[in-house]
Length: 198
Image 1 (tube, rainbow, N blue to C red):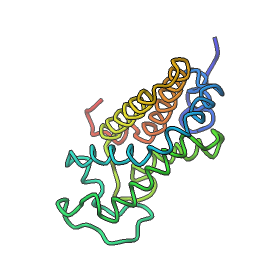
Image 2: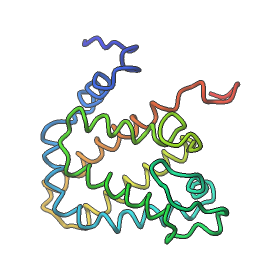
Image 3: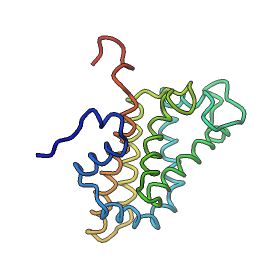
Image 4: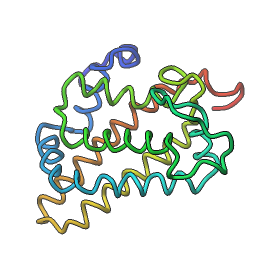
């Protein structure tokens, strides 16, 4: 039985991801499957991004998070939710960042810099990094990650790959997105919950 320093999991990113990848069996073969999907997935990133933003715009509770200034965005701000259409500069800015993220998943090496990037994706949706006014509730982040995971799965299935290649890609992305989800959840600590909730 292997001993894990549970306290270290909370502050040592590499140790945490090492534990997650070992436990889930996320291996070099999984990374190879993810990178192997790049020629097919990269060209459809714009459609994936559009699908995500179409879904986000469906709910006031998710769309309202695009009213405050986004980290790195210098343009004009919308004043009302009703003014915030898909063609607004801030939405185009955020869509571009999502596209960069999705491309990074299938092209970048999974080294320490990539782990830090994936971790920052979680942190940026809280007041702990980026915009202090951006505080996306965890339930919305989980819903978003579930939607993204399903969209990636549906896209991979649409390629009609050989069964073995398809299965390897689906399993690899499933593990990767669970790791990403953990690196989002870690920034939502218990002290953020109202007293009496658990």
